[in-house]
Length: 330
Image (cartoon, rainbow, N blue to C red; front, top):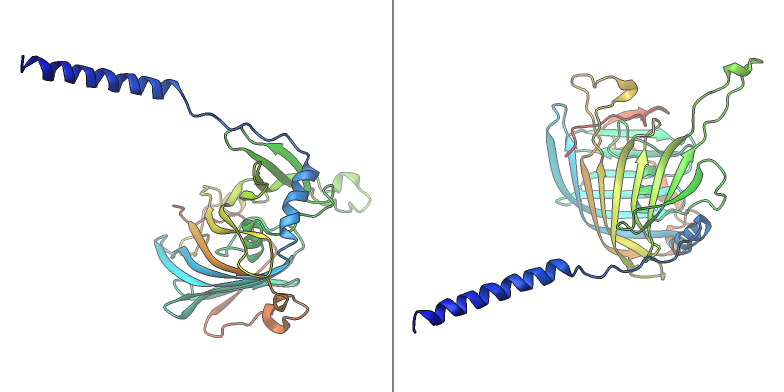
């Protein structure tokens, strides 16, 4: 009798466990229905409605985890902190510190953009605005124009039929996103009387903006090079209302990563000893965002002007610097 009771109890417990597993496996969690489909004009309106509340702001970066690659391709990881000041559409100023010392800075205005990095590189890149969509990071860790795009807080042009042309597609039901694709339409060159001499370049995808169908907030940005290959992308999460000065929402977690490819500029392998500066990853954690008219370019004075750090090597960036040049990715 004493031996039978444990055996019966063990069998009962095993049967109950099996039944529970069967019930769990046979009853998946209910899937939330998708919201009704909307047009591209409605998606743009929803995004721009929020971004209009962020015409200029200052954001404090509590953590910026950056990976830099040296000439030998070895990664160097740094944890920085700093602040970012931004005004739509092109004005940007950002400083990042390590142990209280300035380690990295980037910025831009309507005429030019720049990036300087002290550790590993000791360089300062400066480029002029070509008026085109920023594509691959090229020789820079990240193009300041790219950073603005990757945050998902820049205004989308209301004229959707202009270059870059904006079109809409929807993701798979699991991703629950409306995807705005921006397509560059190459400008035609005059052919000196020969119609066959005009540019025959085909349209190319330059950017994707993934917008969550439930919240109507951006959740992902993908940038492409001039060959239509994905170069860099960001994941946007932890959207919160800004700390002071506005009712706008801002992504307090931004995870930026390069997309590893074998292609390099014009299809050639990188030259030995050349620094390939595209970051494997840059993770930004914001802790405070403030909207204030002091950051309006009309009142900010020299805030958005380039100041060359004299201890760094100056490297001008030409108009073709956005070709895909990848460091070993993570």
